[in-house]
Length: 72
Image (tube, rainbow, N blue to C red):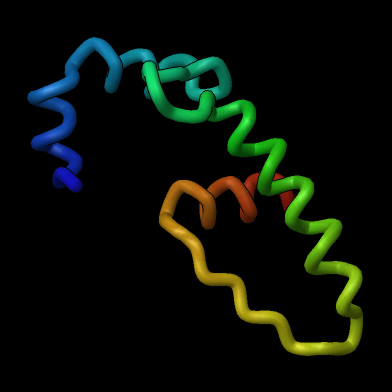
């Protein structure tokens, strides 16, 4: 991985696209952000099936952000 400032320096155009239109951001070979959000939304359905139980979710930062964003 890269630190934020390293990614910004190395991938300036992509970084700007991410900042201005995250929902439609896509990098070749990777899931588009919109698809990530849909996967996060679907994950809530699986998590909520375990009402009354403790659930541990282990994920990367982008997935964690998508989970929080789709929960609001």
